[in-house]
Length: 158
Image 1 (cartoon, helix red, strand yellow):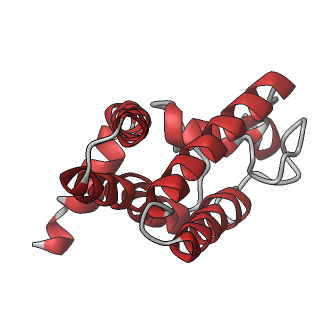
Image 2 (cartoon, rainbow, N blue to C red):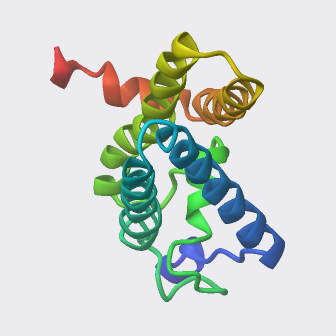
């Protein structure tokens, strides 16, 4: 198999739009949770998360640019990276090292903020937001458990 045919990937428009839309929803839910304490924190969270996901993981994480049938500048790899088990093929090692920390930013920070907020006052809005973020986080964590486990529990951190 030649180098060019091995890396060729064809992303459907539905896969691109739906996958990236789900990631935007996840980032928006995190921003809404940060917005419970401070609107500026919500804007900062959204900006940082969008930059890390779409620029660092998406654009700089793609190793197969110019080889794919439908070049998406890494946007096709993002849904694979977050929501598919086989999503680490042909992804830059820098992006793979950054993925667990991005995952923590999208998951742990909004969950912690919502739990603290729920201790102050329990509302249906906060509970639904927590359930939505937990659903996204648990699905991505189950699918990416090998990547997350090797990143956080490898011998280099012991």
